[in-house]
Image (tube, rainbow, N blue to C red; front, side, top):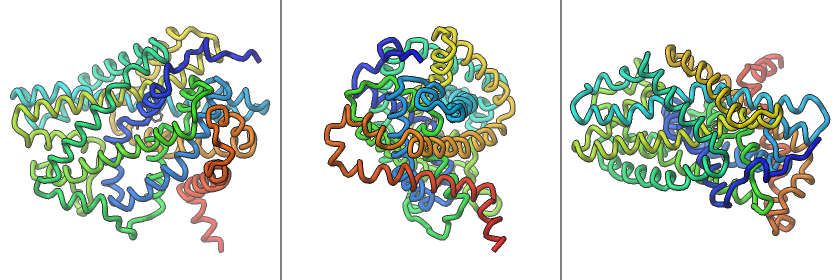
Length: 458
Ligand code: PHE
């Protein structure tokens, strides 16, 4: 098999560029739309705790695995498994990743479209053209919804056409710090609003009695989704990474940045929910549980912005949704890059053609979804909550038992001088061979009822 050199496939310009691009992939709607929704519907602090555990004990080790596989092989997820083993089964792991990427991108584009349309909705609201009650209904259904999905996919495809360093790297460099800045300012504001303490307590005080199998399962799915793991996005990004880079260090930065931003989003949204209640946003269902539906985030945050003065609301409201759209864009780029690089590498198709055709195909699914948004939850559940951990399990298995950790160390040591005396070298194999795959497997079996079935047998 001819080795494709990294020079012909594109490369990151700098270490910082890579970390920002990978963090850009990780940080997105997963942190600010999906995470708070999951926290709110899964009992607050207990979910947060299990989520953090999943990020560090499962997510981080898998991230190192994906980046190593990508950098070693210089290939897309399917090609990478082909290059590392002659067994025909293993490329299916990559193929599953490509499929998850396609399906996740299809609903992600719809939600990203809402986010982007809110930039304009906020302007219309503050200039008196849209009623508060009409905000979400206005963008989440029908033609307007479809138009913004098309716009968003168009933006994603055009950046992918620009290639790795110019397109992807440049966009992320400046956006992330600004997003963090706005989050911090908003947290500072919301902290002093009535009801904020209830939200903080809900979020930060874990109620251990809430921990249940479905909670753990959702938290694990959220960790994979948020860190962009399990579908080869980071195999693909790793394939553009220079041999000089220290993979575990880069993975640590990316994990911390992603977890940090999700944590901040929770600090903003949990208290903001209680504040939104005073605006007539219904945050509880009939049995008094927090109602965390998909559209909640598009009602809670506007309630917060609308409590400000017109000028401040306009500035914060529009810039927040603009930044969130940008954060979503750096994630959709990585989602589209997976199937695109697969088609480029494996079928020798040009980047332009590959990205346009695949983006167009996915857009058709998005358009179908945008007319029946209840599909979002089902697709999200199958391909994110179940699909990504399944992919992660297979990656752990492949790396621990087929490619083997010794070979990973050979790949890692090129950019990591102190590897052989490091704590990482002792601990990481335990996580990748035993802890992460067993935890994932247990949760998957539990979710399909297998564990309960076995328990009942005895
Ligand atoms: N991590 C992204 C987010 O949080 C979503 C994503 C999932 C991107 C899987 C790539 C792969 O928004």
